[in-house]
Length: 139
Image (cartoon, rainbow, N blue to C red; front, side, top):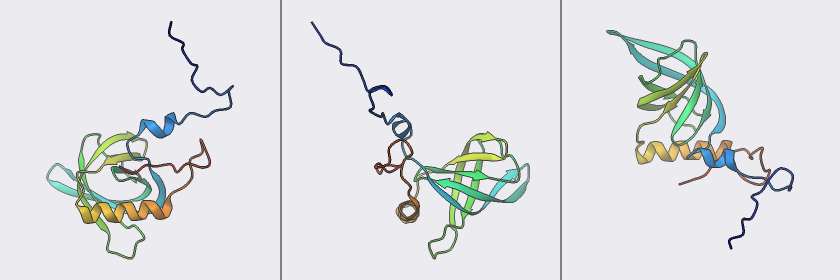
């Protein structure tokens, strides 16, 4: 006979980490300038926005216009690391809600990945689910 052990529940006082485990790369809150460029027919559209959060696989942006889900954009991230803006070409819009939207990065070069990772490390916060775990993981 198999015994089934109950999983952690709110009533048992143990906390699960489901929010942490749903996403491959958790995001660190970062507020900085971002410029995104995309095509609108034959013309290139350039829009300024605010970077809301960043991970090694993508970011969330608050913009002034609504991009179309599935479109590719070029991003210039003005991250505060002492370097020139980080230019990422081929970022794909994965969702749009109002003027906020998410971008999935293409495969980053080792240099780009290192810069993003360093910025995330400087801006990491503790998870609200458990105050002793960071809100992202490194793979």
